[in-house]
Image (cartoon, rainbow over all chains, first blue to last red; front, side):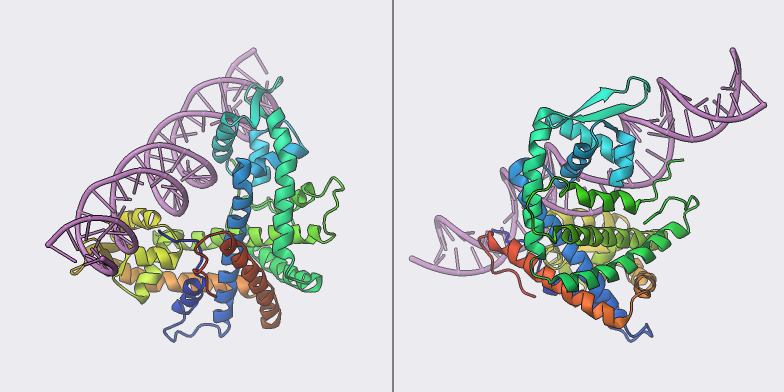
Length: 183
Length: 183
DNA sequence: ATCATTTTGTAAACAGGTTCACAATTAGTG
DNA sequence: CACTAATTGTGAACCTGTTTACAAAATGAT
């Protein structure tokens, strides 16, 4: 029956030992670093799975939902603007919009002033979807987080923010432009 | 010049307000829930970017590195076993192994006893790669985590583990089998 | 032994990403 | 004005993953 049902967490947790199993002289907290890395990875992936499942009955994918969410705040964005906000390439947005247009959620209209640009608008169907999706996603979100107290949440968020800041430094470092990042 | 350079964090952080901007009666900590969700999402994605970049000069991708890592612990796994451990479908592993075989990192050999199975073995080249990759990845890992104290790391890990546990419940719940998950 | 079931891997068609290369259209500079 | 720059979107080729459907081989129960 192919019961894949993602996660046998054990398999992944085990693999944390992989990198340290031969007594190389690595920082002594590498182990927990890796555990933390796996946790991040797992939680992120599982969140995606759960949200995807909540979205499926609504006939839309997570990526498409993001586009809808941004358009619902600011209808008529250009594809380039969407790409920047969603942190995807223009090509990715192009394909995404292709499929969403085929699905009838959005439509492309030529910009009047700029003949290069094509602005993306929610259709009636798209507008109607947004509210429903938003509710479903919020509910899932709240459920997931119901197991942690607000205090611990703050603490963990602080740690994640530190890590994120370091990651931004790392990513921004050897990349010529470097003016792009802003918290 | 297309300075995409992933992350304008602001854009994503902003979008946290999207879901709550119309005064629906949602739990009052939904906001921080969403912030946390975004943080997880961002950190996970950025970690991927950074690790990918460390791996690129070594001529291998992150997914392929995972396969190598598992094989280095247990050479000659079947594709099905790899799929289970890596939490991917057999099909995904099939394609992955195709490309890695083409790249000369691994080779398929028929199982002697089971004519269906094809076991995957590291080639010499693959074996040689593993050590180098491991070092590179460990270094990046250590760098990323260098900004947090061990104590906070423990705290954050605890929170993530709670969340992960809840996610496993959610995923396992409406999925007939349900016997699959184990921490 | 046979026959149904499970297991192993593949193929095809799709969604979602990437990079690189490109045409068209602005926009800026002389 | 003319020419170069930058910007907007696409196309092609690729990697990674999914689901669905399937052939082949192994297992198990009768």
